[in-house]
Length: 261
Length: 270
Ligand SMILES: Nc1ncnc2c1ncn2[C@@H]1O[C@H](COP(=O)(O)OP(=O)(O)O)[C@@H](O)[C@H]1O
Ligand SMILES: [Mg+2]
Image (tube, rainbow over all chains, first blue to last red; front, side, top):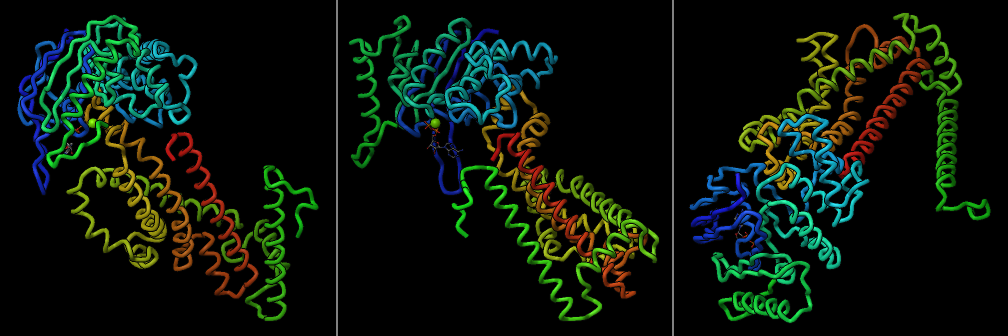
């Protein structure tokens, strides 16, 4: 199966006792196999909702998500997920966390171990196989999260602000690491972030969303090679342009300005 | 006392331990002195001196009591067996039930009126009914079961409700089916809470076994021994029974506290 994603007319309305929230309205996007697409948009505009619907964790109100031409129903190991708060299993060691997806798929023990070790190594955690989650730093935890999501060889990985809980320096390191890890594979990456800097640094394409209900404001192609220079004039210019867009989206109906984060 | 003159160092583990030990020893010595003086002042056969109690204890451990012919070892082992049987029964019922009730709101709402009526009843109040319906062997075991069941159940339900939704989402996106989410996420994630229920239940359960044996039992047990010896007026023997109840109680709760801390630490959930 190939890893292209086709999102068609996706909408989501949350209904609670008091009110109905239209989180997403008629969202359509096509993503090529192997592409790294980031989604940026004002806080609360529906980014997490989009990722959860692609991941099959949230049922869309209408519209479809298709992977390699086949419509997705519910969650599955073909779409891996990386969470902002890592969502690692604290009762399992690093190795056992990474093995989880293989374990539930019934992969034999020896093969499981060998494959998990390969991925632990590729995220730079060699030697920490037997460490428990609470012994790791934030950056290391997310490395485990990435290895755990990649070990089942998903066609797509969905990352919801995966570096949002990390300090600025670790964040930059992790961005480079992510590019290094996904470069070798044809895995498609859909990446949600608050950080415009991060988006410009890693993306093949950036999707800028409007405020809620989210729809696409603009799609920006970035054909620049890696590694990118954060201080180059075109980098800062693009960053400023996207920030401007987000700021204009953040003007509240009552005229007050909201925050971007 | 000025501890600095003894070179006491608060940051030294051994010093802290020795200090604690010394205080405990002094505390026990004071306790025995009070007991000894009380028994002399009261001059009542129902309050024997520590010395008389000690002699009785040695005799009972070596030769046994005159009524049942059993040594204290046998009485203790009988009580412990009943206690463990009740404990295992409570584990087997309360844990699956707690997982289910934590998982399904409907089931929880359905069962909580009944459970809330039964919960405040002191477990020992069931003893007459249990002894009449299931007899002397299972009666005390069922009293222990009731005592341990409720704290176990409440803690397990609480544990399931506290499971991070993200853990289940992560498992699902990794391909786990419903059953695997249950066995590989919900079950292990609730273990610390089950253990906490067990820890609380152990204390309650030990009180229950002694109480039900005191109330009525047959064929031995520490509570049974105390009850018979009191009826016969062998007061030093009664005191031996009470002391052993205390020691076994401390050991069981101490053991479960230790197991709880070990497991919680091992699993990385504080
Ligand atoms: N489970 C839910 N029930 C009700 N409303 C929700 C739920 N999840 C999200 N929302 C609402 O939908 C909107 C979009 O949320 P989300 O997708 O989390 O935004 P973002 O990730 O862009 O910050 C928000 O207004 C949020 O309050
Ligand atoms: Mg979000």
